[in-house]
Each structure stands twice: as structure tokens, then as C-alpha cells.
Amino acid sequence: MDPFSGAIDPEYDVIPWASPEVEAMADKWDEDLLERVAAMPAEQRGFFGRVNETALKLAAIHAISRQGRFASVTEADFAWGASLALESVRNTVDGASSMMASNDYEAKLNKVRGVIADAGHIGKREIMRRVRSINARELTDILKHLCDGGWVTFEPLQGEKKSIEVFRSNN
Image (tube, rainbow, N blue to C red; front, side, top):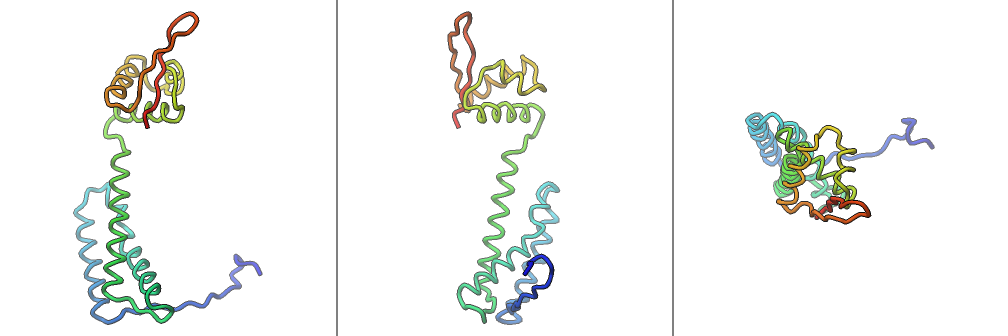
């Protein structure tokens, strides 16, 4: 039997609300959430677009885990699902915000830091080859910033003819 042919008609159950009051409470929560999301900065709104749907799914899973096949979603189930969904999205927004560059310099700094982290240790010349959007002066400033901030360590190595500047990631 091919599961992608559409020939399978799965049996499913609709999980009801424990009471009309619980359903009304969940609807009110969704309305309040929509108002709060509308007031958020535009770059954060997209993250919150499916929070209510996720909260409902988590609430249903929570109810089934407690009551089995004939479960109904209680206020406690919905509160659990909504809390978990909101916390998950908040963590996603915080993580995305910390990874996004707020200006061109920060974008270049993040790029250089990533190149060094990927390599483990790397020479300045090789960084210049991998990051072509940065000139030598900018790279020198960025490497100093990364060393001063403790993200990388500078290790001068003596070669046969001259010393080599090597940078090692501290992360």
C-alpha cells in the first residue's frame, strides 16, 4: 500500500473542549495575543503568527497524555500549551535577535568570527581569502575587536622566513 496515493483514510478523533467556558477562555487568549502581536516591531510579528495554533496542538497533546483517547482540553491543558508555545517563540526571537547584525560592521565581524570558528585556527591571509568583502584595515580592526572581546586568541607563529599571525576561536 502506497501511503502517498491518498488511498489511506486515517481514523481520527476531534478532541473537544472540557466546557464552553474553556473554549471562550482560549478564544479570548487568541484575541489578546493578536492585539499584542500587532503592537510588536514588524520583524518580530512573523514569529508569533502560529503561536495560537501551536498552543492548541500542545494543549491537545497534554490532554491526551493525561486522559487517553477520550480526553477533553481543560483550562490547565490550554495554559500549559500556551505557556510552552509562547516560551518557545520568545526563545526563538531572542536567539534570532542575537544572531542578526544591526549594521555593516557587525555583519563583517560575525562573518570573520564564523570563519575562525569553522576553521578552529586560521591565518590572517587565509581569512582575507575567505572573506573578500573586507579590506585589510577593516580585518585588522575586526580581529583586534574579537581578541579584545575574548572571542578569539592571537597566536604569532614563527615560520621559516617570517612570523605568521594565527587566530584561534575561543568558542
